[in-house]
Length: 83
Image (tube, rainbow, N blue to C red; front, side, top):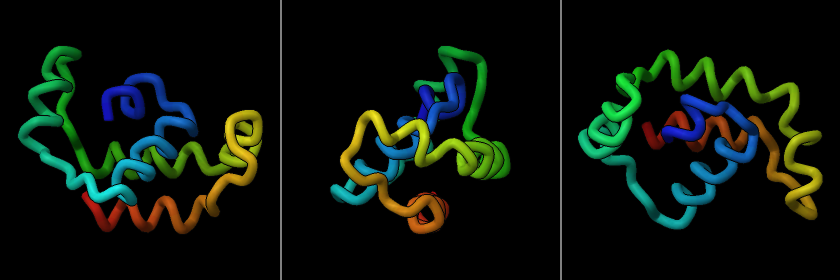
């Protein structure tokens, strides 16, 4: 979460989605404790904006890392459901 909110790369969205798909459930208390080190807190609107802003570069940024990237729309929906 920190990487996504601070760095904001497509791979950060992918990593978060991958963890969700593996059964990880977000713990907002823990997330906010970790984000406090950067003087930020989890905000759903900011999270949505950050994820959405990476849609245009999704395929290009993940192509060197994955044989085939999952569809961005599906990843976005899954993340928003989880949070």
